[in-house]
Image (tube, rainbow, N blue to C red):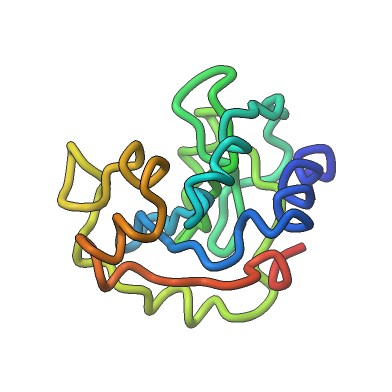
Length: 154
């Protein structure tokens, strides 16, 4: 699934960029987002912009997809679809993998914060990047910690 897009994800996994950081956006019946390192020093990788790939697979439940805010805006942030989100296909969100095990755990992550600031009560991504897990722990104690997520996807 989407092999060309996996390169930066595998690079982030090999560099342990994704270890010990948190799911910072959990929107019930939509997506769970992660990919900002818990260590602010590692967030320099977030400045890279892997090329967007054409959508060849649909955003169905359990697929792993790079987040972006428009053309040439991808970074190390990814999301897991909590349901079939086929409307994201037309917006250029191309899945790169699928959760192989543990989807039941993903579905149980704390979701009461909802959308990220300023649209919702969830974490502010810019503060998350600059302060890492310390920001999340001090302001959003229930945000989900994950470790070595790259071992559970293909």
